[in-house]
Image (tube, rainbow, N blue to C red; front, side, top):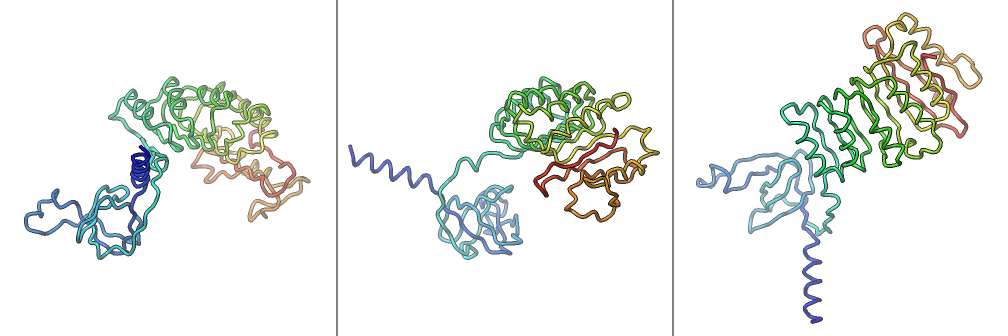
Amino acid sequence: MQRATAADSDRNSRSSKCLWALIAAGTRLEIPRDATKHAKSGRHAPALKLETELWCEALESGASWTCLLIPAYGKLYVKNARIIKTETRASNKHKCKLKRLVMNGAKTTSQNLRIKWIKIVGYSLDTLHLRNNTLGTRALASVLESCPRLTELDVSGCELPDVGPITRAFRDENCILRILKVAQNHISTESQEDLFRLLRDAKCASIRNLQVLHLEDNPTSRENRSLQVLLRSLQRNKTLRQVVLSMAEKHFQNAQTLRYRFDRDHNDQWLGHEDLPIQHRLAVLSIPVFKALPTAVIEIIFDYAKRDVYRHVLWD
């Protein structure tokens, strides 16, 4: 009985390891012999030429050829003479899981099918891009539930009426998003304000994960009331690094003057708006191409000293 257990342990140990090969730069990799029309003539079809050396997993080997698993290409063959060296590595199933999924503009796929795909692979994802897909609030909630490890989410141009599911996920301490892009939607100002208020909630630890927020090309409130809410939140929130918002049409004529208001230090001393020294720890507002692009980018720079950062918002 003990012998059988030892044999099983040895077999499991071997199965948990895999052979990796280092392939020389300039090597021509070929598709499997039995899958090419050149197989009968003894010639092979080159599929890929390596620009640099590459480590890849060896699936099987023969007297003169080795079958490799090439990222983004699948199985390809290489002559053994082009292998520089090999080594045995422990297999890591976690690393084999899908980390990044991009499904931008998948118009030919129904929303239900997209959600089913996400549910299958969602648990391991840390990045998900669903830009330019029709996505309802209920579907967004399902995405967040299926992807608990997301650190970057792009749902721009998805016709979203609100970001309630995201706000609730932060409140429930189930969200570790660092980058959130919800631009070019129909997000109501009320929903935006709910998210802005959460930014200053000292009891919500998960909201402090958020570092980049894109909300441009969404509805703006009359007299930019929602931006007043954001201003009060930024006075307490010290972790949000970048906010991208749409700029109301009426502010264009004063854009240059308003920009100058951000070029001041803690003592309200004039610094100028070019080549600002990094030690001033400003909240720098830049609006590139004012007349052509109705978007303002607030970059909050705060990590250069221990004391709090002096910050303002353009539309106060």
